[in-house]
Every structure is written in structure tokens, then in C-alpha cells.
Length: 231
Image (tube, rainbow, N blue to C red; front, top):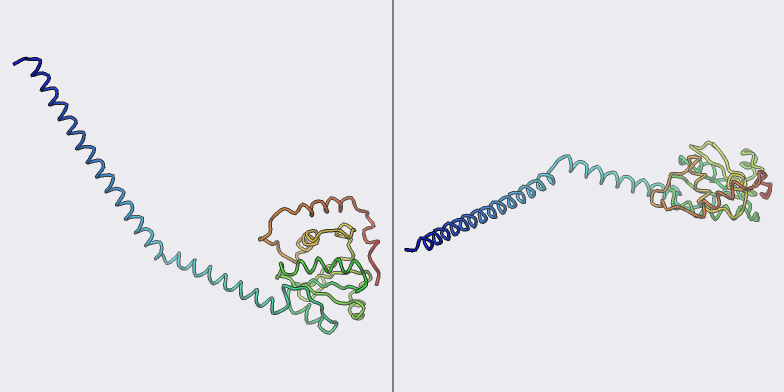
């Protein structure tokens, strides 16, 4: 027999054995990976089941539901008390309105004064977005007693009440730039600084008009209230 042929045959047999062994190892590796993946998937399912049955998670979920329900009930109660809208009240209603809730923003106005109508527009716009305060207005002509008691000399005059006590006021447009064309955002920021309303988290977009108006405020005359009307 040709030695070279024998050598070639043996070499082929050895290569064949190596390939067969490699194929077996590859198949074994695939089987191991499949088992590992199946085990991980089973563990995930178990973990999810355990998580869903976790008493702490269930307690947090129940607390969240209770908190949302309480908040909804609070909002409904505030609406029943007159929050969420800008309403006109009478002299007879006044004491009950300002003492019946924590925060009240009361606009004393005159029907014929142009600036009072501007203030009306902005307060009406803010009221639905800030249920934490009550927004009301009172005709100064028909409320001489409280106009005198509160020493109101210039209209529009917006008085801020907390627990029935007048803590601050906005006279004319003196803190709004002294001009008639201020935007609602300007008044909203002022009320926020006074602690009468909370920041509305649902509307965090930048208000370009507000910043333009703020620049005008800086340039406005120090005699800002000269265009407001006296009672």
C-alpha cells in the first residue's frame, strides 16, 4: 500500500473526527444557551408575579389612588364654595365670602372705569386655573361701607384676603408696569409672589409676551398710577 495514501487517509479520518467533535460541542453550546434563556424567562415571570404580589407596592398604589380621590373631592368642594370662577358678589355677601375660605382675591371696581374692565378680563382668565384661591369682584359704588373701612381711594383696587384678613392690595396698575396693555401672565406672577396662588404645573411654557411686558415695566414711569381713577 502506498505510504502516502495511508497517510492521507489517516489525516482525513483525523480531520473528520475533529469536525464531528466540533459539531457536537456546537450543538451542546446551543442547548446550554436555550436552557439559560428559558431559565431567565422563567425567573422574569416569577419576579413579575412576586412584584405584583408585593404588599409594599400594593400599599403605594392604594395610597396613590386615595390621594387622587382626595384631591378630586377637594377640588369639587372648592368649586361648590365658588372657586374656579370669577364672580360678582354684593355687599351683603362680602363678609361670608372673604371669611369662608383661606385665600380670596377681591376686585373693587367701577362699571364705567376702563381699567377696571381690563382687570376684570385678566382675573376672569386666571380664576379657572387657580382653584386654590377665590376670585370675586364688588361694585365699589354699591359698597360704600367696606370701601370706607378698607380705605379704598383708587380703582381698580384688588385686595388680597387670607383667612378673612386683608394682607395686601394692588392699587391701579402700579405693580403691573403702569400701562393698560400688560398680559395676564404679569398679573399671575404678581399673585404668585404675593402667595395668593400656586404655580400652575400644567403650563410651564415660556411666555414671550410676559417677558416683553416685563421689559416695558422696567422702562415705565415711576408715576405708574397716574391713569387710574379715584373713587
